[in-house]
Picture 1 (cartoon, rainbow, N blue to C red):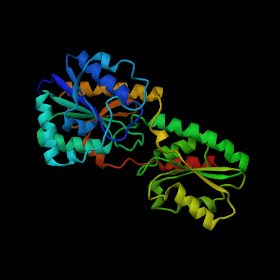
Picture 2: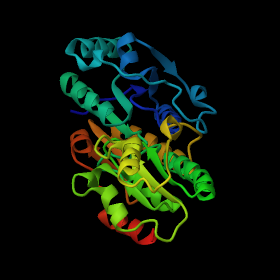
Picture 3: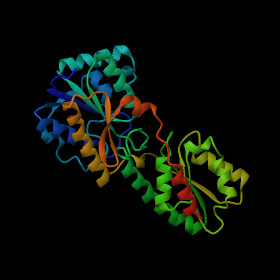
Picture 4: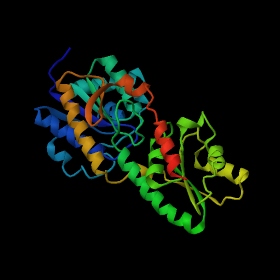
Length: 327
């Protein structure tokens, strides 16, 4: 049943991603443009329970589009995973007369949103904010492009020292369950290989790397590794190399949280702005419990269940391209 939405709440949850501020800005200003009031919820679902809710106006989102992180902060909330916690959160929604929510985050954020919407019949729209690019139903997520460029810049610098000392570097990037950052940063930086969780159950990627003679014509090598337990991570692979192939001079670099930070790229600012505006349009159309995605440069609505449960697969053809180009 569609009903008039006069006030929306907006929050960010889970890991931060560059472009979240651009999304907050777009949601806020599009809502105000459409005659709605905006309530900003600090610290995600934790803040929704703690009643960290304030009025937002257009000036609250001035001069934030270029900044990384999220002005609304983010936090994990064990309490929101309980029925009692969600009841408190809903009571605060009633208190502030919030008619709908826009939540910005990843699969954990959308899992909580889906349950909350089912229990209390409140319209919720999700914006995919995660550097991992692992949500099904969208070609890209907010923060992914910036993280990719951060990795590439780091790899370019590491290659200078790798070449000077004729070393093999394992560089670990984020992507516990998804290899998008590892694969495409390897392709863009000219790395010799990417080791990703999607393939590790099919083949021993390190053994394959050695058998293919990946270093036969080069005085240094860069291998990008997703941080997953499935791959063993950069340290695990480096230890294997030291035991099985002591002839290699192996080094490890773990990029860590620098991948999350920094000023968002133009692409992330643009898609965050488009998605934020689309979230308000979706609410006006009576949509609920959907994620805003972009497919072939067109805005699409993706049910939370699909975005969360369906696997977004790495393209095997792209892996073949990387292998051909690394000879």
